[in-house]
Length: 188
Image 1 (cartoon, rainbow, N blue to C red):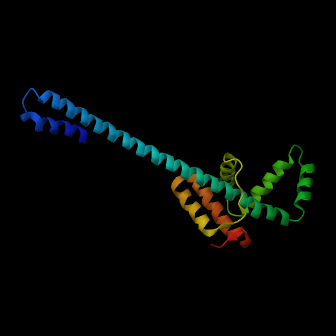
Image 2: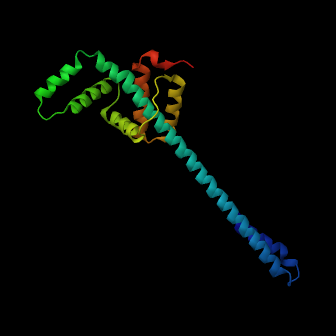
Image 3: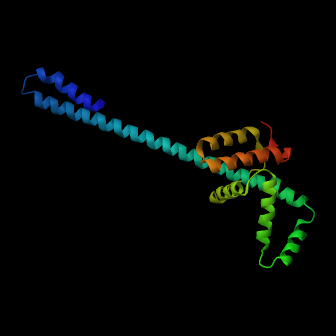
């Protein structure tokens, strides 16, 4: 709108000039106004693209941090729980012999799901988190986490993720805070 109004105001201001100069001046003014409008549009487009890139980078960083938390949770909570269960490997072997067609991986997956559900996540949330983790490929492993890092991930997840993903991340953070041994927390 500003550019449209600029065209009208420029022609009104210069109507008192001699008629021989009017067309040239009006052409120059209209050309300059057009450049101004084009430049304004291009700057607005660049701003939008920059905002989108920043949001994409934030989302990528958030998903990477979530993937690292999933790996930390598997290492510190799931594996520890499996190791503390009475002869879980013998139990799995017994089930393999008992259930024809079930693979060791399936039984282990089921055992892991039971642990995860007991720690407060749903199967759907766990599958969502595994998908996020697998989608990020190999991530640098973290062995400890601070409460402030968990809060930052929580905040980014609340802004950037869809509802199902966000709820899964919130449940993971809660499970880490509740069930992970304090030795894996960094106090900053």
